[in-house]
Picture (spheres, rainbow, N blue to C red):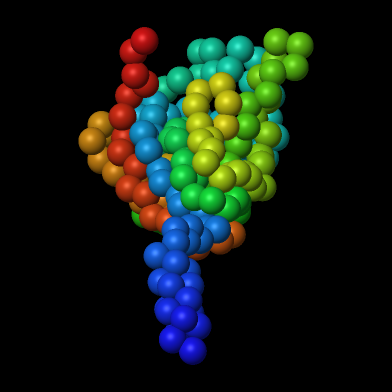
Length: 174
């Protein structure tokens, strides 16, 4: 009887001390920034063609109505389970809306196409960068100056809402 008790206690100890890594996503956001360069896109539709990708269209010191700009970041899922970015939202004080976009080039013409969600496999990184995935801020309500921050809420399927204070920063020089 005593041996059974010892074996039982040893088994409980092994179970309690074994590594138990839950299968959960672990989301982190890195290198977030919003461009201070505003682009005027009257009547911006959800899919638009931009020959040369903003050649001659960049304007600074502009806000309101049709002014847009892009935001970039890296989303890391360091967890053991996948997650999905379902959407993003922005404070109504900064912009009318923010959308997830992807730039696609077909026959030398760049198109920004909205994307509804982004899959984040376990132990992965998804980069939002110029010429690829990005956040498109539509209807900027004030001038963007270097150093100010725009609050973005990112909604994930499993991780819930993740708030990011995205700084306005110029394009890094290579």
